[in-house]
Length: 262
Image (cartoon, rainbow, N blue to C red):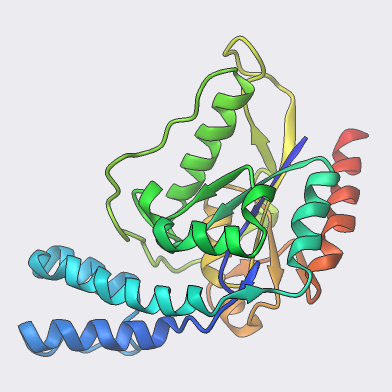
């Protein structure tokens, strides 16, 4: 059995979430309180603004997250299913893959949207920023995913952080190549002992942050309608590119069959 991990915004659901606009509002809040931020060659991103606040203005961090929640709430209220999303998740399960969601959004807004859109019951695990120590492109969410499924396969119970430390993502440069890294999800099978048996894992998303996070843990990345210039800029090399989510199950089935015959 394999593992298929999906991103949320612009992958499984279509929303008007605008991270650039969120960053502009966050920067304005910081500069109103602390003056102009240091100049830089490109725009400040959300994660970078939160990191700056942690280091230089920790008393403003919660205000920044309130800005984020406002943007996310409006986006989730308007969320609709991405074409092919239900086929992709249902088909992944039918193909023998466990399914998980890995999103930087807040749990309080993510879960109701998943339930309203009929996705919640199709996902074995939902990982949000409330569960992670760091957000994508940092790969910490994979730790949560791996611990959950390892515990299930070992007959135990999954554990997750109870005190999140928001957005400590590292926006590192360099090459994020999934093709040179291990491609398996390894989990103990019964009795708590590690097994040489491994199952294929894959991360599906629309953004370079998904690809960088996947490559950091050696998991292949399937790009769904991703911006090629952004993938090139961050050195992300998808194992596959999809314009239609409904085509994912057939690709996964071929991948699972390929591993089964090795």
